[in-house]
Structure formats: structure tokens, C-alpha cells
Amino acid sequence: MLNFLLIGAGQLGSRHLQALALSDFADISIQVVEPSTEARKVAQERWEQVAKSESIKSIEFLADISKASRTIDFCIIATNANCRLQVLKELLANVSVRQLVLEKVLFQSLEQLDEASHLLSSVDTRVWVNCPRRMFPIYQELKKRLANEQTLSLQVQGNGWGLACNAIHFIDLWAMLGGEHDYVLDTSGLDVAVAESKRPGYKEVSGTLSGASGERGFFLTSTAGTEPVPLRIRIETEHFIISVSESVGKCTIQAKETGHQEVLTFSALYQSQLSHEVGRQLLASGNGRCELTPFNESASLHAPFLQGLLEFFNKQDGYAHTLCPIT
Image (tube, one colour):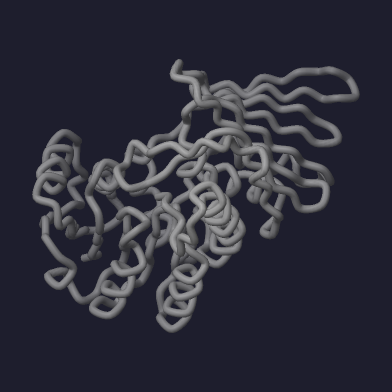
């Protein structure tokens, strides 16, 4: 019997739970830790809405980590960023965890990131960060095709798509496609006005967030318009111009030299279609690895992002915040 643990069963956490219901590679017991009575109720309702594998032998909804099993094979922490470090510390102080997936944004400061890195280096737990575009077959195909390209520019444009909250997804995609881990962040293209996030207590930004490492860079733009516009993703290298529409499921690859265009179709994957596959890769593949971003790699991508945004918020507020108010 494998023991699964999900910590945080809010909007995103409950989608993880729906995916875990599909796990079919071993007999599985699931525990869900969620202190909010309302969120636990929503998670239970969503659990009841989905078909379940016969391999799921039990599920238990708990209010705190202290009641969880002492040995866990696969854990997902899907809390908000403001409490994630404390949850991680409490988890590892009480539970032996074999494989762990953390939601992003990982933490809210470099100090928290460093503390977590030090803690994780002291335990025998493999840790991954949930930037799931690495699992999309379309991006895996593009990575293969762009393996020998020397230059790479990733541009993402849309409006109101939560730049502060979601930029790390595309920084991670850029790193996956180009093999970069280090970069310099530029916040000079962000709009001066800071907005309240749809999540209470957090901030959002608009404008352009960019970064570069040598001949590889990214430009992430979110305008402040109210009309929803699907994200437009453009990748340019010395040999190709690639346009990706995730909402339509269409990828166009144009060769610069000949003008020849190739169109690939795909389906964007939702979280409720992915988490069980992560568990299968980690526990049933034999090598204990998965397609998500390893923690140390993600930490190196988070560091300039967190520091750059924290400095931006402090400049706009005229106050020396120690925590970056994003999740």
C-alpha cells in the first residue's frame, strides 16, 4: 500500500486531488490535510464528482498534519506561498516523505528559499516543483527541435493573466527550452500601479517582465485590460519562429530560411489530468524521477524573480518589505 498526502485542498489543491483519484499503479491510501472547514467541504465535493480508480483503497480528510501517517510515499504541498515554509518544516519534522511536490510560487523571499534549501538538503526526500508545462508533449517536442539553437527568445502576451503569480511558469518554460538556469531579471517595463490580487493579501503587476542570459531571453507582458485575451506565446531562434496558442491547441513552426510552415495540434493539460501521472513517474517508473522541475533548479529560477519583484514592490510602496506579496 502506498501512502499519498495532499496538504492544502483549496482551489488548486482540490484539482490535485481529482487527479490523484485516477492513480492506478498500486493500492493507494490518500490523506488530505486542510485546516479550513469550508475548503475541506469543497475538496470532498470535488472528490465525489470524479471517477476513481479501484486502486484507491481509502481517503481521509484531516484538519492538521499531526494526524497524518508517519511515512508518506508521495506528498503534494498546495498551500499558498505565505505559509508554505512553515508547512514544510512541520511536515518534515513529523513525517518521513519519499517524494515531495511543491506548488509555486515556492516562497516569498530569498531567506525563505535558502532556509528551505538547507532543510531539504538534510532529509532523504526528493523534491520537485509544479511547473507542469514541462509535462506537455508539445513543449517536449519543441525542446527536441530547438536543442541545437544558440539564441532563444520567449515572448508571452495577454491581459490580466496574473503576471506576478504566473510568470515563474513561463520562466521555467524558457529554462526548459533553452537549458538556462541563471538570468538577470529586468522589472523596468512593469507599470507603476500595483494592483490587489484576486487572492486576498497578495499583489499583482502589469506591464512587461523580462530576463536574459547571454543570447537567450524572455519577455512576459500582461496588460491591465478587462477584456479577456488568450495568451499568445512566441518563440524565436536563429532558425525558427514558433507561435503557440494553448487555448486553441495549435502550434505553428516557421523555418526562417525557407518560410515553410508546419502546424502541430495539441491539447493543453489541466492539473486534474496531471498529478496522478507525476505519482506514477515517481513511484512506478523505477528511477524515482518525473518530468517536473527539480527543486534546486527551480530555486535558482525563483531567486532573481523573487528578489526583483520584492525590490519593485518596495520601490512603489516606499517601504522595506521583507516578504514578496505573491503566491
